[in-house]
Image (cartoon, rainbow, N blue to C red):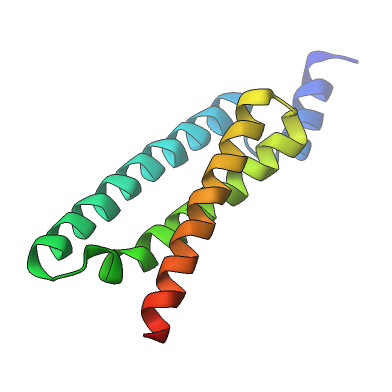
Length: 109
């Protein structure tokens, strides 16, 4: 195979993105996730100061956020089989379950 054939095959497999673009997209999502957790944390702190129960108003945001992180980590763990990804998937799933239970119990009350 010549260089152009390999490049064309790679672009078809990566849906028009080259390896550098895929790495930049992954880093952008990681940065967006970090910003998201900071915003959720700040919103929860603000609501905690303004109300009698911070978990009552912040659990829904954190439930959604940790659900997303658990899904991403689970896919990475399945595909890469790295112990660190498996540990993150388990931890994020635990946080998701905790905040989901907190949200439901506050909603039922």
